[in-house]
Image 1: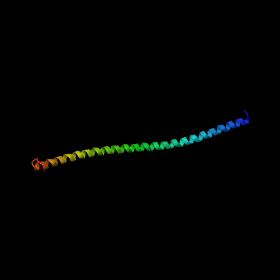
Image 2: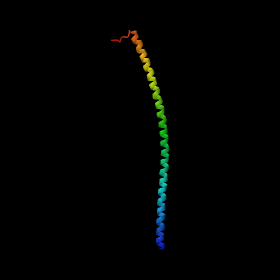
Image 3: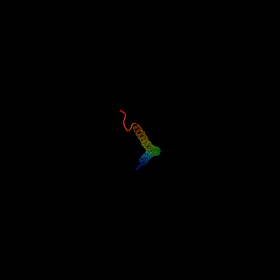
Image 4: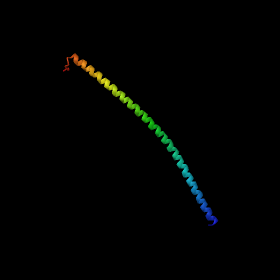
Length: 90
């Protein structure tokens, strides 16, 4: 191999290394962005889980309140029907 051929091979290797190093830098930047997005997504999922739990608790409270209201309306209907001797108004 001549000195010129060796020089060309060395330049080729150096260019390949530069290209590889640029690719690695870009990959590392993308990886860092993905890690940040992933952390943000986990935070969002945790917030949604907390909101879902709170919503489920509120729905349970609402269902209990509705059942209590139904009982009170039934008592009121019974009182009204007793005042009319059990007859519905026609």
